[in-house]
Image 1 (cartoon, rainbow, N blue to C red):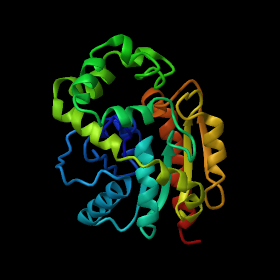
Image 2: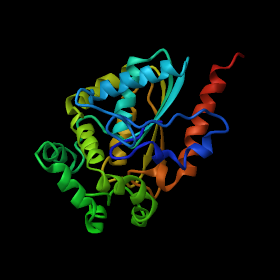
Image 3: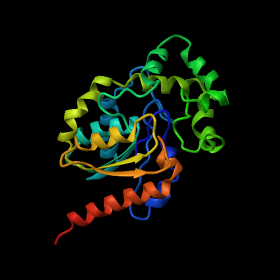
Length: 261
C-alpha cells in the first residue's frame, strides 16, 4: 500500500482493518515521507522508489503481490508494475497523475521548493488554517473540508511544521517527480500486465474524474473503474468502506479467476 504526496503509510489506517481478514497489508513510507530514512544520495525518482519496493518484496520473500496506491504513490506503483511484472498480479490506483495533465499548483511547488529557505516557508504556510483549507493547500482533498481539522492535520501536517527535516524530505520527494515520465505512461500503460482497477473520488478537482476514466482505456484490455461519490482526492480517507469494498471485490474476483477449475 503506497501513499501519495504529502502523506505516509498511516493514510491507509482506515482501509487496512477492512481488508486485513483476507489480505496481508504492508503500508510503506517512501523515502522523504513519514518516518523514512534518507540521505543526500537517496534516489528520489519514481523508478528509484519502485526499485526500493522491489528490494522490500525480496526481503519479505513475497512471491506475488497486489498494489494499492494513491496519487504520486500510484505513479511509483506503475513503475513497480512494469519493473516487477512477474510478481505484480494486480494494481489498484486511487486518484493519481494522468498523462499530459498538470494538476493545479504542483509544478509551481516543485520550482519553489528548490529555492533556499523554502522548507521554512512551507512550515509557516502549514501553520495557517486559511492556507490549509484553500485550493492552494488541501482544500481540494476532501468533499467535506471538516476532515482537514483534527486527526488529518495531526497525522500529516503538524509533523511537517514541527520537524524541519521532515519538511525537507517532502520537498526532496516532490522534486523527484518527472513529468516526462508521467506523460510516457500514455503508451506504457498498455505494457502493464497486471489486472488494473482505478478507484476515483468523483468530485476531485486535482485529477478530474473524466480524465481518469479516459486514462482507464490506456491499460491492456482496459482497466476497471469505480467512482466514489461525494469524495475528492482522498476517497480512502473520506469513505474507506466504499473504497475497501471495491478493492476487496476486485482482488477476490481475480483470486477466483486464477483458481483451478
